[in-house]
Length: 205
Image (cartoon, rainbow, N blue to C red; front, side, top):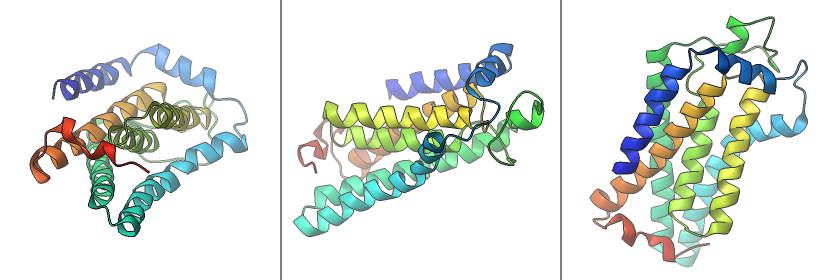
């Protein structure tokens, strides 16, 4: 739970810092005049595919191999998604922040018409929730490193595409990591009655 308190502090600090000029300056430095890169667009849209494909793969392999531990991992990942969604939507409407392209129409160039609440970045939160949940349930460096690099890429893409401020992405990442840890703790401590260190990491894909 200490990790969750640290993440909460980062969330609070990032929210307060979002009012600073450096926030929009960093965002402008990443967002080009014409954000039409197919790679970054693909990175941004990949989050919904990966977030569904990863738990679905674990669940399917659990059925095929008749290993309930793999199915438990899929449930935990879905739990992380549900926690992340609740936190993200709650923060979006509590903070009620305009998107950067709406507030700075002459300085931020979005890849398409964007509306809705800006903080935190939902794409980034979902990516980091997926990466965290996957990492906690695997523990192998060759899974953890690519997972977080992909999540960071999703966050960068949201700034490149003019959809979010830098601080939106940072808060989204914190929400995602917190959601992954929370789901892991809830499932292993309360549902499976295990200690978090006794997770089903030993059963991997």
